[in-house]
Image (cartoon, rainbow, N blue to C red):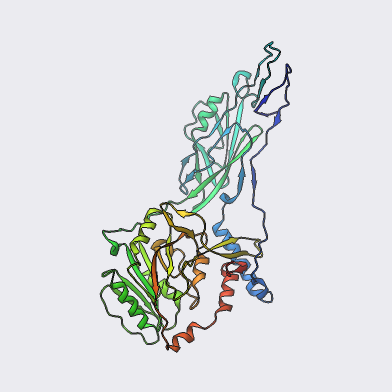
Length: 490
């Protein structure tokens, strides 16, 4: 049979032990992660829709399409066999769709059988005999006169050998199964060094699993099929005004909005301010470097956010509510410094807000468990950030739910955006959609103030107090495919 190498260090007294060989695994193990149930002490969303068979059916069908769009063979768990004599790429082999690419690192390497035996030394007190039982795949070299044969099998690509020459025989060249025969290990490896893979599918990102078989050894390695993307790069310019745009949304609160703009201009004279306005009777806001976009009345907070962000041309934008107030401690430069120090960050947040809103140190983290496909996942929120800090900035910790004052990468947020179906109390929903997509840091070394609440403006408060529980519940159940959600932080 085919034996795998065993190295045994054995210490005894003037005694020799021989150990039986072990049987090598016959193939790489490929498995899918078993489905799991998730649970949380919160609202069981399915209970609200148990009598709505139409919604449940459409949800199942749309989730199936979502999985088809986002899943690939690269999600499978691969476990390599122990001490296989086969060499192959285990990570990083990426091909452009439909383009011929050399497979790097293919080879067959197995030593001859050798038994190294250290006999007794004759010294009565000597302990320690080292036995190394080295085994190999028989008939590897032509000293035994054997023919060496291997196969490569792909499912989403074609395999070919460039200039087979006289090193051996190649069968199935240009197909999805390639059989190579040689009379020597050197000839076999020479051919393996010229094997190419060409995908037969065009996808932005998918994958293939190639099976590599030699005698009783069968391993599997992944191929990433990916279309390279065009980079999106912003010019940071020379100063903060070319790096950041301030964005806000207003509705029936022009007094608060003008107070905010006044405070901004105390410290940032020429920074562009973009305003999304869905008031019933809009009023033009005057001032330089201000862009005010009028929307149909009452379109809502998230629709306004998306509109404002769509008009940003700088690398970063600062989101601020229209009733906040800048002070000398509201230093946007410090947030930019954090973002530039860690390119993986998508958002950096000020967590220190004046006590008027009672949210000093506002920061949360969320965890998401996928759960079973027919039920959906579970989302839970916890108070406080993660323990990991941003390198070089101990004041900043990773988080994923923050207050409405944040600096964000424009291109990152555009990939998530703000759901326009959410019109009023909809802060956390953006961060729910961003779980697993955006990396966020919470920082407490800058502050922003909140304007004092003013009496009156009953029209604004009547809209603000309207409930959207049913709408939010449907989005969580259908759009986010949740089974259970608990946003009451522990």
